[in-house]
Image (cartoon, rainbow, N blue to C red):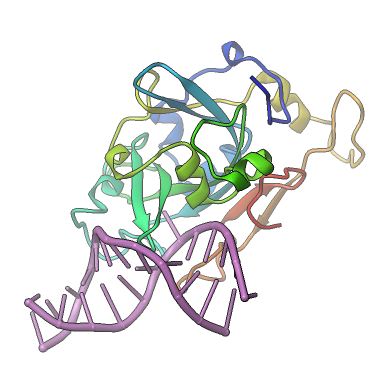
Length: 223
DNA sequence: TGTAAGATCCTA
DNA sequence: AGGATCTTACAT
């Protein structure tokens, strides 16, 4: 199976992310999720992994937050415990996938905006086949290629379920742990930078710098 | 019951 | 810059 990922780490060296680790402010969790892995497991056992390379944070006091006003049928899971999925339909066509974060009663989430897939699932568009590294470059495309829809909202993100998260591999983490002041990459430690900037596509909270991405990744939706 | 807007993406 | 496409939230 052809790999379209920049990393070749095996899955066995990564630990599942548990709800406790996600029970922090979304603006802390969002950059920490860069380099972590989203796992999609289908009913037949087929499993795909994607490195998270772009995230956005949404917080309780954030006017762009779907739960900014009050609980509704759609947003109720955001008010609950961390470690749940929040999936919603956008513009009638796509879906967006979020990880619920922070403490119960503090509606918060991290939107996953782009992944580097370990392999390209069946059923993608011709454009996906032509540029597999772009198949999950954007929150709508990410859900489309991994077949994430509204049936997967309000689900625990835990191994064995359709979706769960895994921590950074030690190999990947090491790339971040270069000595401070080092601006040049090396063969063993390629240059790896995070960029923090404003979020995309909003009409509210447009100036909050709560989008993070891996600068070198070709899967980022917009640099 | 009606309606305006939307955490997108692709094409022109 | 515009259109696809439809659910949600809030107003009436």
